[in-house]
Length: 88
Image (cartoon, rainbow, N blue to C red; front, side, top):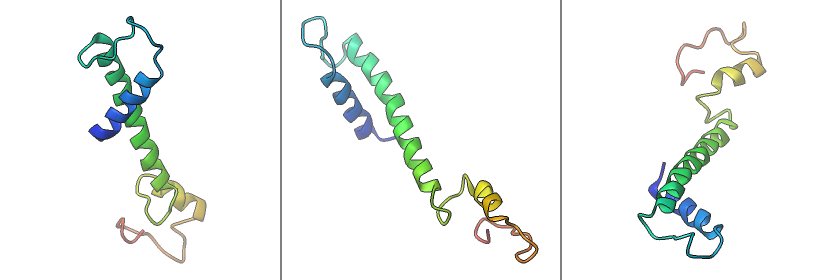
């Protein structure tokens, strides 16, 4: 997960805060550290969504390859067993 992506989420979360002295945006404040924790998780979910988007392409997938093979009825009697990931 990228530090830049996390920092972007922190900035977005800070922009959503109401104005006022109770909502200090200073780096190192308790609120900033809390927002960093939320941003780390948001960036992790963002990265995971990117991974799953790549899995939608059967030519690039690795994690969902078994599911794609089941949809296509593979391995079949014509193809025989496919041992390696590259062969699959």
